[in-house]
Image 1 (cartoon, rainbow, N blue to C red):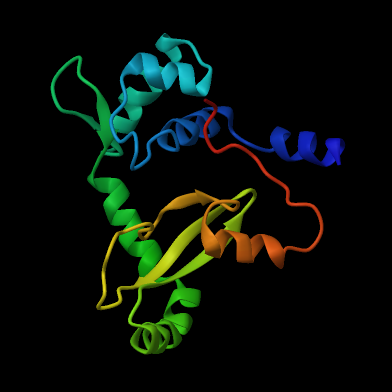
Image 2 (cartoon, helix red, strand yellow):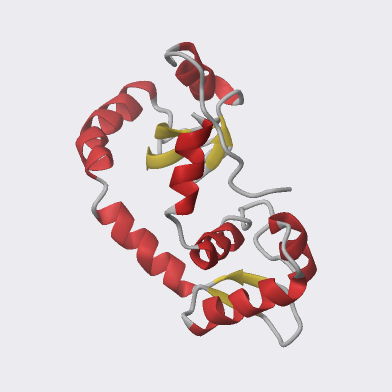
Length: 168
């Protein structure tokens, strides 16, 4: 198992891995981060993080509200998200059934896919009795939190492999 992991890591491009780890640090809870916060979260020197961020800014993946300010995800992420949603065949297939379920229960229905110890909301149909929003499209949640997460855990086969998406 360890040899497989090392072999997989050897076939990656370190700069790309680092850039992606920076992008994955942003969340709905923490949607703006300083250079220092990013550096700490990805365990890289500020100078390295700054060079990567400069490239991400140039390609419109990150932006700053003002020079020296915090960074946030930019519009290129939105464009790519829209493309991903359009090509999400699982969501398209499940949507009519989710709509039926929402109509029957008068509640919101969510479709999650499992990624390690987490689940990601890939489709959502809002019910008419909207009380409080617990999840949203793209939400990355631990599998142990909430009823749907516990259902996924209950039917998981074997050990759940996991990897933190962003070092904290």
